[in-house]
Length: 356
Image 1 (cartoon, rainbow, N blue to C red):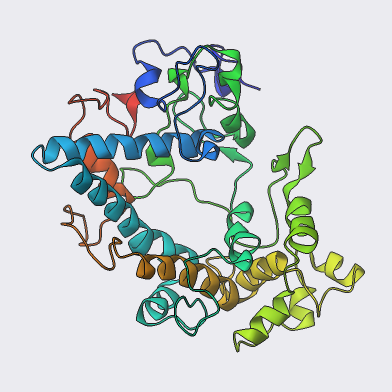
Image 2 (tube, rainbow, N blue to C red):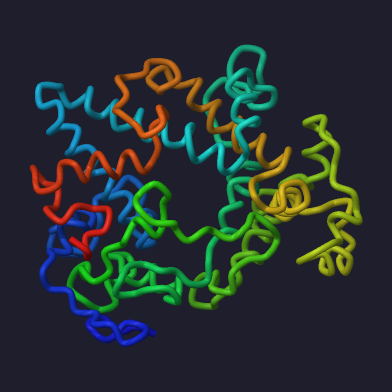
């Protein structure tokens, strides 16, 4: 395990004193009770170093837009930030996760996620099939080890990302340590190097995904929540309701996890979360979600955007320049980088601050 201020794997010097880590950290309360409490709408954005720093980059993006268009009122800047985030989701995230044809189909018309007169729901909502199963696909994509930056290079345990946050106590330090600033080139394409890839979407999970003091495997928690708490229908029932052909028993019983399906006789009544992962494994080789999982994810996200009168699908604000005509996450980082040292944006930038 890497100790704060000590040596990184391979003997690299872990001391970084030239940069102020607070400029890259989330804003935190100074109420005399807990100065590590992040000022957030959702405290989970401070649980994980990668998510926390991505959140901070979005704050920098807001500041960069203020500098770019100083005469615009706050409400317009807020909408621009929101719309560019939504563009990243529509142009890059969803196509990678569900496949472009599924995105295009959901944009053209929603078949299953419906809101309004004549529908079961009259207000926007998050289906349990989404929150309790389909959108938990990312758990299979987590790597056991990551290349975080030049100090903590390839081979650093993923669980350390939960320690160097305010929620994780900064590993006992008084504030966010600057030697843990992320090199975003290692996480996103288009920033100058080939990034490390996520694991495939399939039924195998990293052995690092252990939750709570009891170190319970995340897979176990997902399955128990789906069955006991959410009472989710099996994958076969969801496929039938959507008019899709269900996976055959021999497909479910193949590969990783197949023996467990056989042992507990789940090939005809398969937990939805496992079914979604196995479907991606069978149909796409783990490259993206399959028909059931992909449709649920795409239709819920696009359905919520369609129902929001302020969304980029209904009232788009002006779009910033992009590399290929479709604004993506690399374009967002580069826009922030172009304003580094101005306003409240760090002089070293955000893409790879330790190399500045």
